[in-house]
Amino acid sequence: MAEVFLDAFTDSLKLLLVVAVFTYIIALIEPKLSDKVRLKGKFAPLIGVSLSMLPQCGFSVVATDLYHKRHITLGTLIGVYLATSDEALPVFLTYPKMALHILPILAAKFALGLIFGYLIDIIYKKGARSVQHHISHCEDEYKITLMEYEGTQLVEKCSHGAGNDCNCEDCIKSDCPHLHSHCTSDHCEHDLSGKGILFYQHQKALKNKAKRANIKRFAIKPLLHSIEIFLYVFIVNIIFGIILYYIGEERLVSFLTSNKYTAPLLAVMVGAIPNCVSSIVLSELYIMGGLGFGATLGGLCINAGVAFLYLFKDAKHTKQNIAVFSLMFLLSVFIAYIFSLPFSFDTLPI
Image 1 (cartoon, one colour):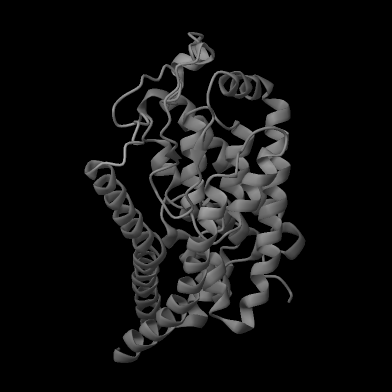
Image 2 (cartoon, one colour):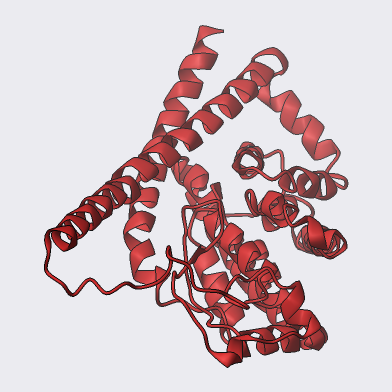
């Protein structure tokens, strides 16, 4: 039994190294994207799906936040959800013999995100028009965050323009604080042109605050995120190790493959659990040979990290949120079975 814990720790440690590399890279990329990326216009689904390919689930939370505020369309949101890769890529990379298997999975998720993202916007034109109307009355200023689970960071800027005062039903229902905004002392730019003692104290305080923020963003947060993933994987590996110790890998794989026709549905149900553990479990089962390509793809398509938790935080639009989740579930089941048929519900012959 001691070997189970040792193997679990060793495998998890390998993943920690891979995750840490990706996490620090994403932390360096984030500032370059935060002020420049805007998910609007005809390229919104393409941009959203492209960013979702990064191995993290923070962007799916950002997309959910923007959807609540009517900054992006339903098609863009669904595209982001389908394309979100979460922790599947690092898991596959820790198994060199299976690493290439993640490439067709990611390619399929990218293509499916684009196809369904644009298709939904074509079909649901009312939603697209609502977003366009909202943006026309809104400053549309926000910062993209890839490693936060609290949505977008709003740009602190006062606005007194008459263009922001729209009382139509769409704008009133929106959660976007840029509409009907009022200037407060926390958001206004104050005249600090006088070079007095208070001015220099203020400037020094701002520099210290920025320095602490940079240490937190580029050093502490990536480390904490990597350790969190390590602990999740360690727990999952221990559970798998105990199961294999008492049951045996061959018997477990045989049990899973004997129920291959229900496996796609079960994989989607596991993937719907709002946590990165879902993508880890699905990836591990595929690597063991217990899940086929279609089932794994379907499960990873619906797995958008903690985005669904954030989606249902918006209690004002519960029916709309249920509709979004139901659409994601049905699409993922459809994808799981459609992609299972060409490979006879088995893994890819790579």
